[in-house]
Image (tube, rainbow, N blue to C red; front, side, top):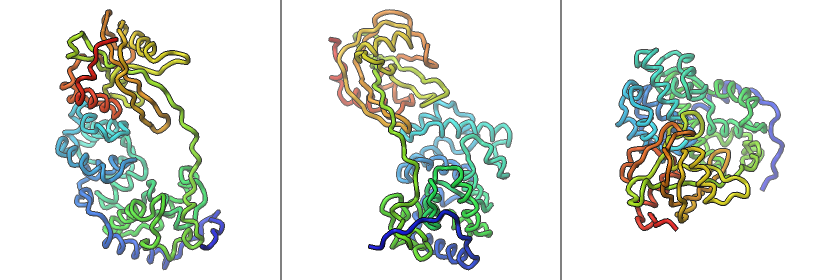
Amino acid sequence: MKSPSPPNKTLTPLSAKVVQSLRQSLIAWFKANGRSLPWRETRQPYAVWLSEIMLQQTQVNTVVDYYHRFLARFPSIVSLADAPQADVLKQWEGLGYYSRARNLHKAAQLIRDRHHGVFPTQFDDIVALPGIGQSTAGAIATFALMQPRPILDGNVKRVLARLMAIDAPIQEATTAKIMWPLSARLLPDDPEAAWQFNQALMELGATCCTLKNPDCSRCPWQKTCQAYARNLQGELPVSVKRKPVPHHDIGVAVLWKDETRQQCLIALRPQDGLLGGLWEFPGGKREADETLPACVAREIMEEIGIEIAVGAKLTEIKHAYTHFKVTLHVYDCLYVSGIPQPKASQALQWVTLDEMSAYAFPKANNRIIDLLKSNPAMQLTLC
């Protein structure tokens, strides 16, 4: 195997001939290898916008079903704007990164109120919408409005970093300043060709020029790729090393209203912040040297203002978020005294297990619900 040679510190300008060759080879590759995806079958701005938001941080295979269900429930921008946020979050349930859904809803309301329910056609108006950055706006403009605009999502950054053997971390803003002109240079002026090129560029990063084990033998840019020429495809792109993420133990109460165990208490998380607008089983972080049952009792008193009896431990659930990890320690609990008050939440609600299907919960909480529904014996008598 050949030894890697040093990556680039500066970019060598691409000649017009090389640019044209890269465009033609990539578009030809896409026509032969591109996946059939529902959002590629439409130029409707709302549908394209929705797909671009859903595809942020989420795999294509996961998105397809959500995309169809969401459009069936909210077939227009106005229908989305008019819906309660709770309904929007329920349709998004399980897809994660819920700020995307909240921003989508806010943006739909702005389009309804400022643009008469019609998706804006001016680029500055698009990028001003909540949840839409420069690259997402470029994709929408290219794919729905036939306005050629460069894009620079994670897949594209990886492809360009390898194509030009860029050794700077792709997460840094200074690297983006290098890559934006490159993406723009490669983009054809013709609207239809630009549509094909940007779709192909994203497809190349998603299916061929992958983060691990890139399939260089299938790549239409192999002969021009500087990373491949220097045997750097396994080392590029450069990423900033992540710091170890903290871990938190969370005490969680499945809190029954009485001994019949027909209704339990759920809380609506604050609108701002992580998982805003979703419902959850109440609880919170364990303090140093605190037992988990004591944590559950304290959190319920502090956040809801009631006394409870903490019983048997039902389960443990591990879950990872972007910047931290948690272990949910779930306890069977019974209301004792006091008037429930939403001190740390937007609202509280007593619900049956069957009624929970009408509420949007985070993924980890849905695992608790599934466990309770599948095993009624877990609704234990308090110790």
